[in-house]
Image (cartoon, rainbow, N blue to C red; front, top):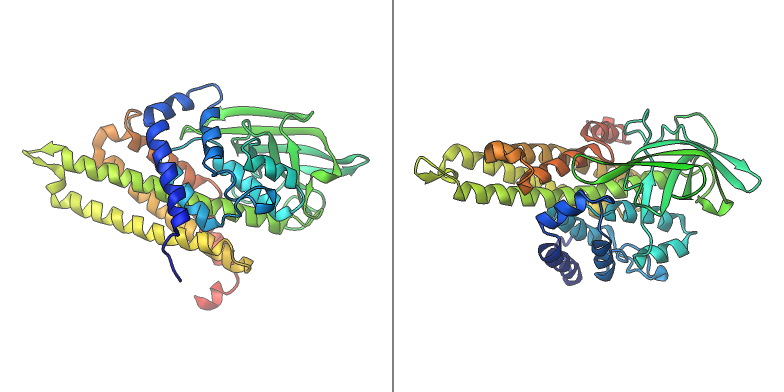
Length: 379
Protein backbone atom coordinates (compact mmCIF):
# COMPACT_ATOMS: atom_id res chain seq x y z
CA UNK A 1 0.00 0.00 0.00
CA UNK A 2 1.36 3.42 -0.98
CA UNK A 3 1.14 5.91 1.89
CA UNK A 4 2.66 8.80 -0.05
CA UNK A 5 0.26 11.66 -0.66
CA UNK A 6 -0.58 12.61 -4.23
CA UNK A 7 0.45 15.92 -5.73
CA UNK A 8 -3.15 17.18 -5.66
CA UNK A 9 -3.51 16.32 -1.97
CA UNK A 10 -0.31 18.14 -1.10
CA UNK A 11 -1.51 21.14 -3.13
CA UNK A 12 -4.72 21.30 -1.07
CA UNK A 13 -2.71 21.15 2.14
CA UNK A 14 -0.30 23.83 0.97
CA UNK A 15 -3.13 26.15 -0.07
CA UNK A 16 -4.74 25.79 3.35
CA UNK A 17 -1.47 26.31 5.16
CA UNK A 18 -0.78 29.53 3.24
CA UNK A 19 -4.31 30.82 3.92
CA UNK A 20 -4.06 30.11 7.65
CA UNK A 21 -0.67 31.82 7.85
CA UNK A 22 -1.84 34.86 5.89
CA UNK A 23 -5.46 35.38 6.98
CA UNK A 24 -6.21 33.14 9.97
CA UNK A 25 -3.53 34.09 12.45
CA UNK A 26 -3.84 33.44 16.17
CA UNK A 27 -4.99 37.02 16.77
CA UNK A 28 -7.49 36.91 13.89
CA UNK A 29 -8.89 33.65 15.25
CA UNK A 30 -9.28 35.20 18.70
CA UNK A 31 -11.47 37.95 17.26
CA UNK A 32 -13.61 35.39 15.44
CA UNK A 33 -14.03 33.25 18.56
CA UNK A 34 -15.26 36.22 20.58
CA UNK A 35 -17.55 37.59 17.86
CA UNK A 36 -21.32 37.24 18.14
CA UNK A 37 -21.52 34.43 15.59
CA UNK A 38 -18.28 32.69 16.53
CA UNK A 39 -17.48 32.10 12.86
CA UNK A 40 -16.28 34.17 9.92
CA UNK A 41 -18.22 34.60 6.68
CA UNK A 42 -15.02 35.72 4.96
CA UNK A 43 -13.18 32.58 6.07
CA UNK A 44 -16.07 30.41 4.90
CA UNK A 45 -16.03 32.09 1.50
CA UNK A 46 -12.30 31.44 1.23
CA UNK A 47 -12.74 27.77 2.09
CA UNK A 48 -15.32 27.55 -0.69
CA UNK A 49 -13.03 29.39 -3.10
CA UNK A 50 -10.16 27.03 -2.31
CA UNK A 51 -12.41 24.06 -3.13
CA UNK A 52 -12.44 22.65 0.40
CA UNK A 53 -16.23 22.50 0.57
CA UNK A 54 -16.52 20.88 -2.84
CA UNK A 55 -13.82 18.32 -2.05
CA UNK A 56 -16.00 15.61 -0.42
CA UNK A 57 -19.10 16.28 -2.55
CA UNK A 58 -19.74 13.94 -5.53
CA UNK A 59 -18.83 15.24 -8.98
CA UNK A 60 -22.47 14.96 -10.03
CA UNK A 61 -23.30 17.71 -7.53
CA UNK A 62 -20.42 19.98 -8.49
CA UNK A 63 -17.81 18.52 -6.17
CA UNK A 64 -14.54 16.63 -6.54
CA UNK A 65 -15.61 13.24 -5.09
CA UNK A 66 -12.71 13.44 -2.65
CA UNK A 67 -11.93 10.40 -0.53
CA UNK A 68 -11.37 10.30 3.21
CA UNK A 69 -7.62 10.35 2.52
CA UNK A 70 -8.09 13.59 0.56
CA UNK A 71 -9.97 14.95 3.56
CA UNK A 72 -7.19 13.76 5.88
CA UNK A 73 -4.73 16.39 4.64
CA UNK A 74 -7.37 19.12 4.87
CA UNK A 75 -8.39 18.28 8.45
CA UNK A 76 -4.74 18.01 9.47
CA UNK A 77 -4.12 21.61 8.40
CA UNK A 78 -7.34 22.85 9.98
CA UNK A 79 -6.26 21.26 13.24
CA UNK A 80 -2.82 22.80 12.99
CA UNK A 81 -4.35 26.23 12.36
CA UNK A 82 -7.04 25.96 15.08
CA UNK A 83 -9.72 26.86 12.54
CA UNK A 84 -13.11 27.27 14.25
CA UNK A 85 -15.30 27.41 11.13
CA UNK A 86 -18.16 24.84 10.79
CA UNK A 87 -16.23 22.77 8.25
CA UNK A 88 -16.22 19.42 10.05
CA UNK A 89 -19.92 19.71 10.91
CA UNK A 90 -20.82 20.53 7.32
CA UNK A 91 -18.76 17.85 5.56
CA UNK A 92 -19.85 15.17 8.03
CA UNK A 93 -23.51 16.02 7.47
CA UNK A 94 -22.88 16.22 3.72
CA UNK A 95 -21.58 12.65 3.91
CA UNK A 96 -24.97 11.60 5.26
CA UNK A 97 -26.67 13.25 2.27
CA UNK A 98 -24.21 11.56 -0.11
CA UNK A 99 -24.89 8.14 1.37
CA UNK A 100 -28.64 8.81 1.35
CA UNK A 101 -28.52 9.66 -2.34
CA UNK A 102 -31.68 11.76 -2.55
CA UNK A 103 -30.73 15.37 -1.74
CA UNK A 104 -28.57 16.43 -4.66
CA UNK A 105 -29.71 20.05 -4.55
CA UNK A 106 -28.49 20.47 -0.98
CA UNK A 107 -25.11 18.95 -1.86
CA UNK A 108 -24.78 21.42 -4.72
CA UNK A 109 -25.32 24.26 -2.25
CA UNK A 110 -22.69 22.80 0.09
CA UNK A 111 -20.15 22.52 -2.73
CA UNK A 112 -20.74 26.16 -3.65
CA UNK A 113 -20.35 27.33 -0.06
CA UNK A 114 -23.98 28.45 0.10
CA UNK A 115 -25.14 26.06 2.83
CA UNK A 116 -23.80 25.02 6.23
CA UNK A 117 -24.93 21.79 7.84
CA UNK A 118 -24.78 20.17 11.27
CA UNK A 119 -25.40 16.69 12.66
CA UNK A 120 -27.97 16.58 15.48
CA UNK A 121 -27.28 13.04 16.73
CA UNK A 122 -26.41 13.35 20.43
CA UNK A 123 -28.89 13.43 23.29
CA UNK A 124 -28.44 14.27 26.96
CA UNK A 125 -29.22 10.83 28.33
CA UNK A 126 -27.24 8.90 25.72
CA UNK A 127 -23.66 10.13 26.26
CA UNK A 128 -21.82 8.50 23.31
CA UNK A 129 -24.45 5.88 22.41
CA UNK A 130 -26.02 7.21 19.22
CA UNK A 131 -28.58 4.40 19.20
CA UNK A 132 -30.14 5.78 22.41
CA UNK A 133 -32.66 8.08 20.71
CA UNK A 134 -35.56 9.63 22.59
CA UNK A 135 -36.43 12.03 19.77
CA UNK A 136 -39.43 10.67 17.89
CA UNK A 137 -40.71 10.95 14.34
CA UNK A 138 -44.32 9.99 13.68
CA UNK A 139 -45.83 9.79 10.25
CA UNK A 140 -48.37 12.49 9.50
CA UNK A 141 -50.56 13.56 6.63
CA UNK A 142 -47.91 15.92 5.28
CA UNK A 143 -44.81 13.87 6.08
CA UNK A 144 -43.35 13.47 9.55
CA UNK A 145 -43.67 15.25 12.88
CA UNK A 146 -40.54 15.43 15.07
CA UNK A 147 -40.43 15.87 18.84
CA UNK A 148 -37.42 15.72 21.13
CA UNK A 149 -34.15 17.39 22.03
CA UNK A 150 -30.54 17.17 20.90
CA UNK A 151 -27.58 18.25 23.02
CA UNK A 152 -24.21 19.80 22.15
CA UNK A 153 -24.85 19.92 18.42
CA UNK A 154 -21.55 21.25 17.08
CA UNK A 155 -22.21 24.42 15.04
CA UNK A 156 -25.92 23.75 15.26
CA UNK A 157 -26.76 27.45 15.45
CA UNK A 158 -24.62 28.26 12.43
CA UNK A 159 -26.21 25.62 10.19
CA UNK A 160 -28.94 26.23 7.66
CA UNK A 161 -29.98 22.57 7.68
CA UNK A 162 -29.77 19.91 10.38
CA UNK A 163 -29.36 16.17 9.92
CA UNK A 164 -31.51 14.77 12.73
CA UNK A 165 -31.70 11.22 14.03
CA UNK A 166 -35.13 10.20 15.34
CA UNK A 167 -36.97 7.10 16.48
CA UNK A 168 -39.74 6.25 14.01
CA UNK A 169 -40.45 2.84 15.54
CA UNK A 170 -39.35 0.55 18.36
CA UNK A 171 -37.89 1.19 21.81
CA UNK A 172 -35.68 4.12 22.74
CA UNK A 173 -32.52 2.02 22.62
CA UNK A 174 -31.81 -0.22 19.67
CA UNK A 175 -30.67 -0.34 16.07
CA UNK A 176 -34.08 -0.88 14.54
CA UNK A 177 -36.53 1.93 13.90
CA UNK A 178 -33.93 4.68 13.47
CA UNK A 179 -34.59 7.29 10.77
CA UNK A 180 -32.61 10.33 9.59
CA UNK A 181 -34.17 13.59 8.42
CA UNK A 182 -33.06 16.87 6.89
CA UNK A 183 -34.63 19.65 8.94
CA UNK A 184 -34.37 23.39 8.21
CA UNK A 185 -32.81 25.09 11.22
CA UNK A 186 -35.44 27.84 11.03
CA UNK A 187 -38.44 25.52 10.77
CA UNK A 188 -41.43 26.19 13.02
CA UNK A 189 -40.97 24.42 16.34
CA UNK A 190 -37.15 24.36 16.26
CA UNK A 191 -35.60 26.17 19.24
CA UNK A 192 -31.81 26.63 19.17
CA UNK A 193 -29.68 27.70 22.13
CA UNK A 194 -26.18 28.64 21.00
CA UNK A 195 -23.11 28.61 23.26
CA UNK A 196 -19.32 28.63 23.06
CA UNK A 197 -17.39 25.50 24.02
CA UNK A 198 -14.14 25.51 25.99
CA UNK A 199 -12.07 25.18 22.80
CA UNK A 200 -13.56 28.31 21.22
CA UNK A 201 -15.93 26.50 18.86
CA UNK A 202 -19.73 26.78 18.92
CA UNK A 203 -22.37 24.22 19.83
CA UNK A 204 -26.09 24.32 20.47
CA UNK A 205 -28.85 22.57 22.35
CA UNK A 206 -31.82 22.12 20.02
CA UNK A 207 -35.41 21.33 20.91
CA UNK A 208 -37.93 20.05 18.36
CA UNK A 209 -41.59 20.64 19.22
CA UNK A 210 -44.14 19.32 16.72
CA UNK A 211 -41.76 20.07 13.84
CA UNK A 212 -43.36 19.08 10.55
CA UNK A 213 -41.15 18.04 7.64
CA UNK A 214 -42.19 16.62 4.26
CA UNK A 215 -41.67 13.00 3.32
CA UNK A 216 -38.79 14.10 1.09
CA UNK A 217 -36.87 15.12 4.22
CA UNK A 218 -36.26 11.45 4.99
CA UNK A 219 -32.70 10.26 4.28
CA UNK A 220 -32.69 6.64 3.18
CA UNK A 221 -35.43 4.24 4.19
CA UNK A 222 -37.74 4.83 7.14
CA UNK A 223 -36.70 2.90 10.23
CA UNK A 224 -33.53 1.59 8.57
CA UNK A 225 -31.19 4.49 9.16
CA UNK A 226 -28.83 2.97 11.72
CA UNK A 227 -26.23 1.70 9.26
CA UNK A 228 -26.16 5.11 7.58
CA UNK A 229 -25.92 6.89 10.95
CA UNK A 230 -23.13 4.57 12.04
CA UNK A 231 -21.18 5.18 8.84
CA UNK A 232 -21.56 8.96 9.16
CA UNK A 233 -20.41 8.89 12.78
CA UNK A 234 -17.34 6.86 11.77
CA UNK A 235 -16.62 9.35 8.99
CA UNK A 236 -16.74 12.23 11.46
CA UNK A 237 -14.57 10.35 13.98
CA UNK A 238 -12.02 9.57 11.27
CA UNK A 239 -11.81 13.23 10.28
CA UNK A 240 -11.44 14.21 13.93
CA UNK A 241 -8.44 11.88 14.17
CA UNK A 242 -6.78 13.79 11.33
CA UNK A 243 -7.58 17.13 12.96
CA UNK A 244 -6.12 15.89 16.25
CA UNK A 245 -2.93 14.91 14.44
CA UNK A 246 -2.54 18.44 13.06
CA UNK A 247 -3.13 19.96 16.49
CA UNK A 248 -0.60 17.59 18.08
CA UNK A 249 1.99 18.44 15.44
CA UNK A 250 1.50 22.14 16.17
CA UNK A 251 1.74 21.79 19.95
CA UNK A 252 4.76 19.48 19.64
CA UNK A 253 6.53 21.96 17.36
CA UNK A 254 5.75 24.87 19.68
CA UNK A 255 7.05 22.94 22.69
CA UNK A 256 10.25 21.96 20.91
CA UNK A 257 10.87 25.58 19.94
CA UNK A 258 10.23 26.71 23.51
CA UNK A 259 12.78 24.23 24.88
CA UNK A 260 15.35 25.59 22.44
CA UNK A 261 14.84 29.23 23.47
CA UNK A 262 13.94 29.10 27.19
CA UNK A 263 17.15 29.28 29.24
CA UNK A 264 17.77 28.19 32.81
CA UNK A 265 21.07 27.84 34.65
CA UNK A 266 22.83 29.44 31.69
CA UNK A 267 21.65 26.91 29.08
CA UNK A 268 18.56 26.19 26.96
CA UNK A 269 16.31 23.84 28.92
CA UNK A 270 16.21 21.59 25.88
CA UNK A 271 19.72 20.47 26.80
CA UNK A 272 18.44 18.84 29.99
CA UNK A 273 18.26 15.09 29.41
CA UNK A 274 15.06 14.56 31.40
CA UNK A 275 13.23 17.02 29.13
CA UNK A 276 14.72 15.41 26.04
CA UNK A 277 13.27 12.10 27.19
CA UNK A 278 9.84 13.72 27.51
CA UNK A 279 10.07 15.11 24.00
CA UNK A 280 11.11 11.68 22.69
CA UNK A 281 8.07 10.09 24.35
CA UNK A 282 5.83 12.78 22.86
CA UNK A 283 7.28 12.09 19.41
CA UNK A 284 6.58 8.35 19.74
CA UNK A 285 2.94 9.05 20.63
CA UNK A 286 2.69 11.52 17.73
CA UNK A 287 4.01 9.07 15.15
CA UNK A 288 1.83 6.22 16.37
CA UNK A 289 -1.16 8.55 16.20
CA UNK A 290 -0.19 9.50 12.64
CA UNK A 291 -0.16 5.86 11.57
CA UNK A 292 -3.56 5.14 13.11
CA UNK A 293 -5.16 8.31 11.75
CA UNK A 294 -3.99 7.51 8.25
CA UNK A 295 -5.14 3.88 8.53
CA UNK A 296 -8.57 5.09 9.65
CA UNK A 297 -8.77 7.43 6.64
CA UNK A 298 -7.95 4.55 4.31
CA UNK A 299 -10.48 2.18 5.89
CA UNK A 300 -13.33 4.72 5.90
CA UNK A 301 -13.82 3.81 2.28
CA UNK A 302 -13.98 0.08 3.01
CA UNK A 303 -17.05 -1.85 1.89
CA UNK A 304 -16.66 -4.02 5.01
CA UNK A 305 -18.54 -2.16 7.76
CA UNK A 306 -17.06 -4.37 10.49
CA UNK A 307 -13.53 -3.55 9.37
CA UNK A 308 -14.37 0.15 9.21
CA UNK A 309 -15.80 0.12 12.73
CA UNK A 310 -12.85 -1.80 14.12
CA UNK A 311 -10.20 0.46 12.61
CA UNK A 312 -11.97 3.76 13.37
CA UNK A 313 -12.49 2.79 17.01
CA UNK A 314 -8.88 1.60 17.31
CA UNK A 315 -7.69 4.90 15.84
CA UNK A 316 -9.92 7.07 18.04
CA UNK A 317 -8.77 5.17 21.13
CA UNK A 318 -5.06 5.34 20.30
CA UNK A 319 -5.25 8.99 19.31
CA UNK A 320 -7.17 9.70 22.51
CA UNK A 321 -4.22 8.31 24.46
CA UNK A 322 -1.73 10.26 22.36
CA UNK A 323 -3.47 13.62 22.55
CA UNK A 324 -3.73 13.39 26.33
CA UNK A 325 -0.03 12.61 26.70
CA UNK A 326 1.22 15.09 24.11
CA UNK A 327 -1.08 17.87 25.32
CA UNK A 328 -0.38 17.40 29.01
CA UNK A 329 3.37 17.14 28.51
CA UNK A 330 3.34 20.28 26.37
CA UNK A 331 1.61 22.20 29.14
CA UNK A 332 4.07 20.91 31.74
CA UNK A 333 7.10 21.74 29.62
CA UNK A 334 5.84 25.26 29.01
CA UNK A 335 5.30 25.78 32.73
CA UNK A 336 2.57 28.08 34.03
CA UNK A 337 2.30 29.93 30.71
CA UNK A 338 1.17 26.67 29.12
CA UNK A 339 -2.40 27.30 30.29
CA UNK A 340 -2.65 31.01 29.47
CA UNK A 341 -4.89 32.32 26.70
CA UNK A 342 -1.96 34.28 25.26
CA UNK A 343 -0.22 31.08 24.14
CA UNK A 344 -1.48 29.11 21.09
CA UNK A 345 -0.36 25.86 22.75
CA UNK A 346 -3.02 26.32 25.44
CA UNK A 347 -5.70 26.57 22.76
CA UNK A 348 -4.38 23.49 20.96
CA UNK A 349 -4.59 21.65 24.26
CA UNK A 350 -8.20 22.75 24.75
CA UNK A 351 -9.10 21.64 21.24
CA UNK A 352 -7.43 18.27 21.78
CA UNK A 353 -9.41 17.86 25.00
CA UNK A 354 -12.67 18.48 23.12
CA UNK A 355 -11.69 16.09 20.32
CA UNK A 356 -11.25 13.36 22.91
CA UNK A 357 -14.84 13.94 24.06
CA UNK A 358 -16.32 14.22 20.56
CA UNK A 359 -17.69 11.40 18.41
CA UNK A 360 -17.11 8.95 21.26
CA UNK A 361 -14.34 9.16 23.87
CA UNK A 362 -11.54 6.62 24.38
CA UNK A 363 -13.57 4.44 26.75
CA UNK A 364 -16.49 4.30 24.32
CA UNK A 365 -14.33 3.32 21.37
CA UNK A 366 -12.38 0.75 23.38
CA UNK A 367 -15.67 -0.96 24.31
CA UNK A 368 -16.86 -0.71 20.72
CA UNK A 369 -13.62 -2.24 19.45
CA UNK A 370 -13.92 -5.14 21.89
CA UNK A 371 -17.55 -5.72 20.84
CA UNK A 372 -16.66 -6.24 17.17
CA UNK A 373 -16.96 -9.77 15.76
CA UNK A 374 -13.81 -11.86 16.09
CA UNK A 375 -12.27 -10.00 19.03
CA UNK A 376 -12.97 -12.71 21.62
CA UNK A 377 -11.55 -15.42 19.33
CA UNK A 378 -8.44 -13.36 18.57
CA UNK A 379 -7.89 -12.61 22.26
